[in-house]
Image 1 (cartoon, rainbow, N blue to C red):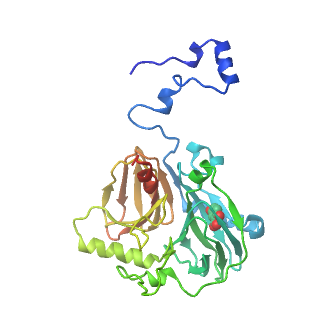
Image 2 (image 1 turned 60 degrees about the horizontal axis):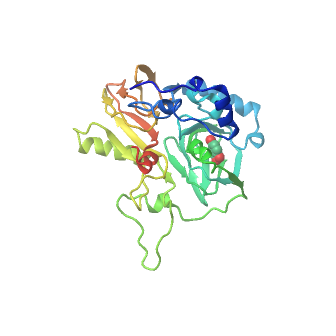
Image 3 (image 1 turned 120 degrees about the horizontal axis):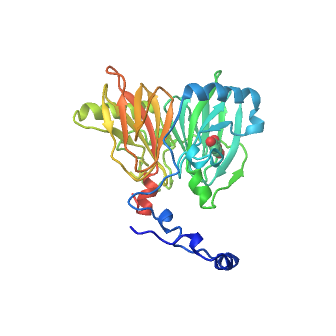
Length: 341
Ligand code: GTQ
């Protein structure tokens, strides 16, 4: 591959004439825009320890009342993008959110899609599109684009969850905004009840159900049971993994980010295929070593990390007695739609 001309090779008055007309020569930047063989990534392999996050988040509970925060969140920011960009990867935003007993995070809706993975505490709930979704450790709750959502807490201990949003992408697309709303009336019908039985969906004779997001809450007990059943049914299966899907279409639960639960068998080492999308790992149960390229960390429950696309990732269960369970988010649906997966 031969050298291309540099900006400095051009006469200063010519460069100035281009700038005056809002014009830029391509060739000095061509190799940077289209690097040879493999993309360049700002995203760095980054590890966030829950042990470090938790006291800082509880301190935020002392320092900033919920009325002054609306959403009391510490953002897990990737230093490769610059912390002020508040992104974990090109399309993923991650945040740890704290709600204290009796607090209320008022209703709003926004264009980015969100999900919450509950990390600790009982008694909180999110009302999404009128459905009151109880929050328990390991549950996944969807807040798809445009749906009203608000968080409340009737328990007596702090509740903490991990937010995953496609905010960086939607913001980059200049499509990110929110609208404030009134407290929602709670509906009696709940998607997690009527879609909870695998392979069986409501089929009313007289009207078609017409919901883009029929299921908003995926209880951890169901996901865990699905993984254990899969591991027993297919002892040879390397990656014991399930995808959170829209139960009516079988498609990914959301359009931009993909969500999965993965089980490592006791003592298992799993080398993941190298793929284009960035990926986020959050340990729900157990202990594991996560190796991203040449960086390796032993992680414990509620720790979170992310890897840039095209990186070699190996997961190892550090226990030889117990399985380890991960919640995973990645940019696969987006990459597939873009045709770059
Ligand atoms: O809970 O609605 O982490 O609107 C970022 C933006 C959480 C939320 C975040 C949000 C929310």
